[in-house]
Length: 231
Ligand SMILES: [Mg+2]
Image 1 (cartoon, rainbow, N blue to C red):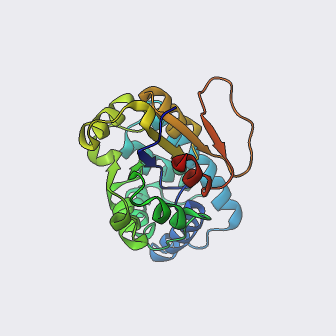
Image 2 (cartoon, rainbow, N blue to C red; image 1 turned 90 degrees about the vertical axis):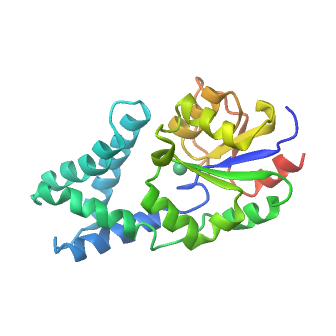
């Protein structure tokens, strides 16, 4: 492997703590729309429903809009909440997601440390509304060299086309000089495999590596990215 000159960062669950932002956003929307209380158990349930919808998006089975509204329709259906409220709920939710900014451990420090050493870009499947607010609120928009949001590009990560479009903008680099860092096997690591670039799996819990994906680096701490780039 050559020296890494370009780092493609996943945002949610990699640089920013998505679980904290998600929890606060869901609670705020329940209050705003007068839906009563969302219990911890309901939240757990929603998280599972939501994950299923995003996996279907990554496989190309659903559109982004079907995911965004469908997950809440299913969730509301389960708890006797009017499913017709799902579109309005989602709209509010996208705004509220940007309210709570919490970095994953060593996320901000590592992006700062790499400044000047490598070009850094965000590659994310979140919505334009939520991601732009989050990136501005966290200051990442100023620290990174650019941002690629699937909703703007029109293709989801891990599709090869998503990366082809980003490469067109980033310019001429060898594939072995580019590395994606992310917590998701199905979107980040699969995406890196599809694009033929170096892959770095942020795996803080030390989960078992799957045999069917090429994982060049398996890290527990985001800070390790600086060591990899510095090699
Ligand atoms: Mg992620």
